[in-house]
Length: 570
Image (cartoon, rainbow, N blue to C red; front, side):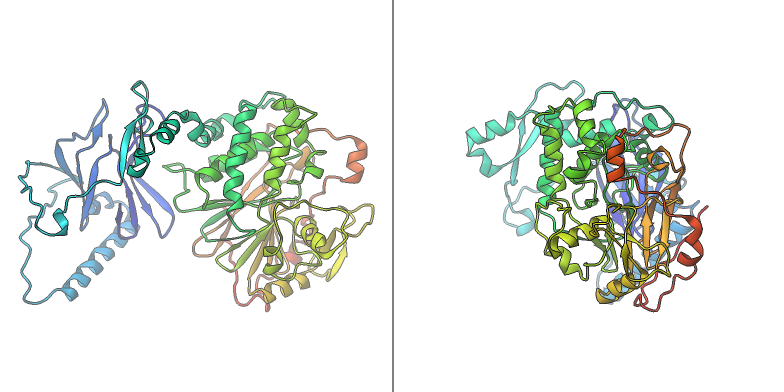
């Protein structure tokens, strides 16, 4: 229910028994929740008149503080009395509404005689409701026209114990009622297959249980193979229906590499809210974008992927997953993920059913996202071959990454997933990437700030946000502020003591970096043999020595006047 720019949530039931939700106000301008008092009622009817909310009926719990047999009034002016910011917004909305109503009314129009109620004290008033007689007439116009509902509620389960109403019935269209056998088959489907993603979220999204404790990397993954595969297939279906280049809107949180360090992901969610609904979540007003490298190195890639897939299923238009260079079966068969599937969910080493299903999903992940037609986000970079957004849109899926490049299309994919910026703003053009390409094949390159400026100008963009490289402060600017790197895994590979960061792009188009630092419980990593490390060594972090070059000027003459500002870190 809305009142001006305020979304109002009243009562409801939480995920656990007896967990009632408070009266909350969500400011859509600032993406902030304001919580007031508990309202122990659910499935009630509500309506707004000017600044007053009226509530009637519904159900109550055993400790009810809001009887259902009276009409209750909450006056928002009284509720907001201690918050001048939202109080001023509400008063302005009411004043504008009255002004508009006055300008639209005729001087000869009759005045309403409907009584109004004003609270004498406090923010809540209860008004007894008397039953109203109605005339059962069918010939007084469309408002009294008799019509059928489009659906029927069909009982599925008679067991009332510990079940909400939504689990006891299914809504079935009237057309389906004529297809009796199909309907019966549908109703007999176990409910656990329908709400699997909900159960995965409830099970895995528990930040407090993961923070500050040593986690056993050898422990079996609690989700069985069948459920993992079902989750993959459902997520894959959603991703296949979305484009290779996503078009999304701010406000949005942007995550860099996670690399199976699930504890770090939980720390971000604990400190800066979760992609859920309710007081500790912000999904109603904030999108989430992940730039890839969910798996390998760290020992909890299964938790990371299963949670992100479940969130993608629940919020398909708000959770966005891009592909990283480790979402590639040639890479993640070596750097930990295959080993984790075998050891922690008993994947058959001969068939690798779970592992292969994951990589089938990875082959379909999008490669880029564009925010508000201004910011392009991808995993690695633009390399030597990427010149336009259309180049990415033309790439077909499913996409296998070819590392022994033989044509321009294969080079384009390698550039997007593997390339890095040069060491500082004075290094121009295209240069060899010795760290990632120690054998000197030449497929993986570094690109200079001149390439960044040219790409942004040609595509009418203002900023590139990418991941792929460990940076000591979790985020780093390049090309005079026209490109940013974000990396979300702390103490990468247990060696570098780097911070992790996410970037929050607000609806005012400001970027706020949120940082976490390595904690006392180190992240465990899968061990690799020496031969593997020689072929693909872990990329060392970029140095802080280039800060004076990279951060000295955020106003480039080539960024089309689309500039980003950075709030101070507290």
